[in-house]
Image (cartoon, rainbow, N blue to C red; front, side, top):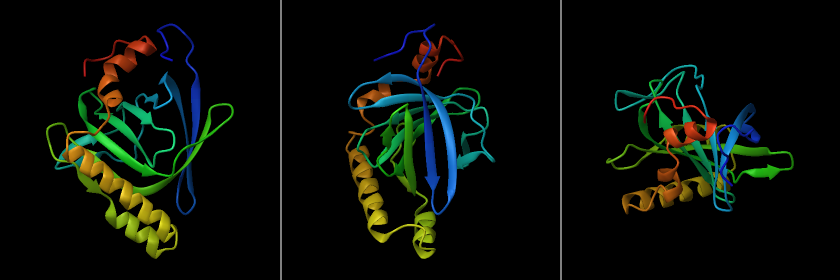
Amino acid sequence: MTSRPGRSLPRVTIHYLRPPDHLQTFRQPIIHRNPQAIVTFSRGIRVPSPMELDGKVVLETGSDIVWFTFPGLWHDIGRFHNARGAFTGFYANLLTPVEMLPGNIWRTTDLFLDVWMKPGKAPRLLDEDELRDALNADALEAGTARRAREEAERILERASAGAWPPPVVHEWTRARALGVLGDTGDPE
């Protein structure tokens, strides 16, 4: 299913737990769905402070993110842009497989680790210190942390081999997402 401009888009409500008890709720339009991936769009997000990597802002208030959720996988992928609409890179967020409930309600738990990949650059693992801190604080079970590390290693290996992110992530650019929303926006 791909939505067309002018149509009312279905929305998902995502309950996102960051252990031990920080629960956030996000509402996003679903712009594409097939059995392998669900594509949603976060428009003009708000963040407490800009996210910088290698001295460059990769996400800030006003940024757009095209999100890719893969049923059954232990990560999702964000296609990040800065507030001016420029593409900054791919972000894999390690999390529990998304529980998809009736009424487009989703639940998942953040597993602290992330993978960042700027186009043309090697992927890198982020936030190992946050995972370690969560384990030390008993906010995450050791088996779940081990599963997150295994998933991160798989992503890093696939990215290094040129097989990550999957094709759907390359196909659904910000411009394409904006087109579905009926907004031309700035070019990617």
